[in-house]
Picture (cartoon, chains in turn brown, red):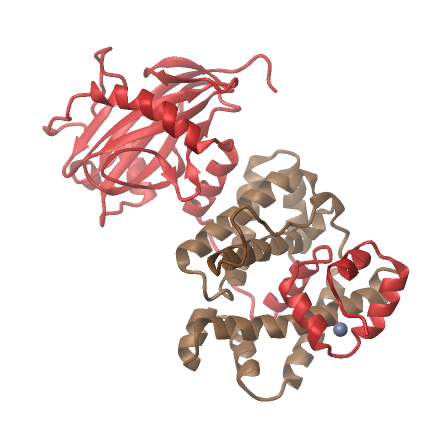
Length: 191
Length: 270
Ligand SMILES: [Zn+2]
């Protein structure tokens, strides 16, 4: 996480038109985007590759309009999640082809809290995980987020459950974390 | 009791004091309705990315990964290629290219030597290469800044506002790597493609692939290097063949075609 400032510098260089900065941004952030995709078990490897590609194409096209270089990572991950969800929903035929989840506008992405705040958030989430009742959800969350090695597909195999069950557990858990972070944002960071 | 919905999310994104105050309290305790809404809706702002950044930071840090060259080449190619009207190009250029390909003779068997055959006769636009089991031909159609399409002969001058559209004829299904090479420089990977037997537009799963010439000037060579399905030389192995240093693949299964253009940089950039 100490690399946030380093990343912001590459974002500024890319935004000023330095082409080699794009490959450095890609090299640094692709593993993170790929790890995010590993949570979407129903997507096959080709679809995952497409989504990763589309994420970077969108992010790099819009990058010169990104006002807060320090928010690049969160913005990129937001785009990646939107792309993956759009793909999943189309696959499940609940979203039409021309219908697309809108990505956050680069001009309006606000400055994000300091790295120190992120460290605190990480501690809060660790605490929340440790307080989960023992069971399938906790096991899934530990395998995917804490150990961080297996994909959701591999976890499904290991636990002997369906692919989408693992993704649903992760999403459910993530909804709780998102509520907690939103509350913290509302309680202090916007005032 | 009010729970999160689209309207509330917008209000929060606009920092409306009443909404902030209400949800700050409401979200202090677990709420199934709000959590499931948050799980399935994006925003506000980049909160989703922040949540994922925190969650993904829980795992032990990973070692620094090298650049995924093929993945980045695909991104770069899509960034450089303007979005094209696939259907329109397919019809017009298809007709253009079909006429073109009809006059190209069936490639002869290669008889040792370079692995790259350079067409010289003016009636033979494009360049053919054939090695082993796959034979490949390349036709190029140029799309001008005004949207016009015309067939391109090799070694002709194009404008830096033009886009090159590629159509290939392959005798076998296979995979191909597309490179561009500027004078005096190394070939640069534009991306990998799956080839089907027959005559097709070069395209990846996202659609038709065009090569933008924006920012180019001077001589430029496009290389398409194909190998039959199941044989996949690495990017570096193919590059060595292109610069004349290949050993194994040169004599093996690689079919290489090239197409040269001279790019005139445009005086009136957009
Ligand atoms: Zn609620």
